[in-house]
Image (cartoon, rainbow, N blue to C red; front, side):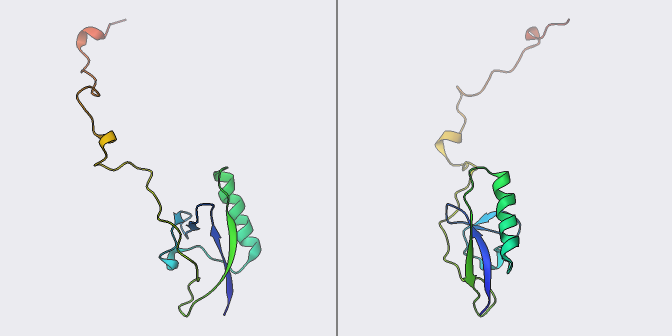
Length: 107
């Protein structure tokens, strides 16, 4: 079996082919390379964009379908709030009154 490299961050997520972090359940979408210098360059580029990133290259084997054999990481939490969260719903106190024409002065 061939050995390839994938990139994993400090949260257990894997870098995808489109430069986004994935949980690794769909192995077809993972970034992979056979070259150790290429994986080092990609890690350098990613950590230049995000100074808090702690990524590492993982050497892994390929399965019968030529997909990397990796353990799926934890689910990726969305940064966008849910529409059903209590904190995101607007109340009457949160809305600002409409501006009137008296508030605008001609200069």
